[in-house]
Image 1 (cartoon, chains in turn cyan, yellow):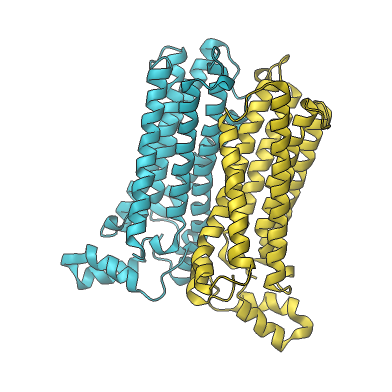
Image 2 (image 1 turned 90 degrees about the horizontal axis):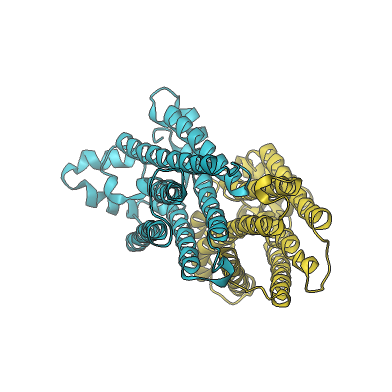
Length: 270
Length: 270
């Protein structure tokens, strides 16, 4: 891998920021808000931000970069696909539970559903995410689709994954805005009480986490190398494949810069 | 250019959606809100969404894709840099006026400034955008920085440009959320009056416009070809360079897939 140290530093910061964001949202609902329960009241609503940030943002972010981790390159591509799909399915389940919590809260409290831009964009993101998972499993995981279909669909799969991830973060920022306006009464949001500042910082943490995930994912030299190259390394040096992989990637004269280049060069990867 | 027709179709839809978004925000402030004036009241605030959507989103989006337009490939790279920089500077000026409008409105109305997540992320985006323009002009436009500096900075310039653009859209979605909650009293936002639905649609238009700009910009085969290739075409066929450019690009065996590949292959482009 080229620039191994910057990769590790940015990956560490991304994971740290994502983890701190989860701690922040947990402290928000437990310390500043009413806590957690499944009672149709404010405590049930609080599952919504907690599970959205934990599952739909943090877990999805990890699922997106999981192919980039050099120490996973000794694992088979199939296993990595299962891990990528599994993390995304887990993120989806948490996102759906977070939706159920807020719909249930609204119904009990006689608050209309689906009136806000936050709800429109958020539901669209959940629907697109379910479609992304179903198409991803059918095309890339099940051994039925021909290579040219996988190759043609890969750029769309990558772009839509990053777009959905970004959209979810934008939705979270709208949700934070809504909740701080509706939830803070005396003092109000505009009076900048500690909760307002704390949750604004949560919004910044989520935004920077998203930026780091997007940067890591879009660096061509940090992509998982082709299966052919890994296969060659496995065959020649089975005892020390992890180290050799890194060396080989940094030395290869013409790394495949993105998925479109991969599509042209070989169809065995997806 | 590969896939010339899909490029033109998507470009048309992107421009159309961006233009419709500008019409929507204009109708919002003129029909549903109080109109436009510079009086410290609600009419002055209305310049904020109008100029933010027109300048900071629509114009910035056009500035981002301007290198991709095949009919500009006969123009010199230097002229395209001036157009790219000029559009971004215009977007920046409109963004700053939109900020002045909202600060002035807040000050006259005794509303605190800079308390919301919308204001934090928005101001950060304006500051990053000014930094992006200054660094872009100093490094890529002025003939002083060496080639290796331009090559090293190009991936950061491209990523941060797309990141700022995306952040501005997320900020607009938060701003729409805020304004509909604060501005709609009887009926309220949750009662879904026509204005709420109309402005939610504006939010969707902006989001899809952003998605199309990001898709167009990140397709490797739609990038402006290298200056060396264009120079060769200019030298050989000066009378019909426009058509020949397209043909040559679609036929070249190994197009440069992204800016990192360009950095490796040549340093004369930036």
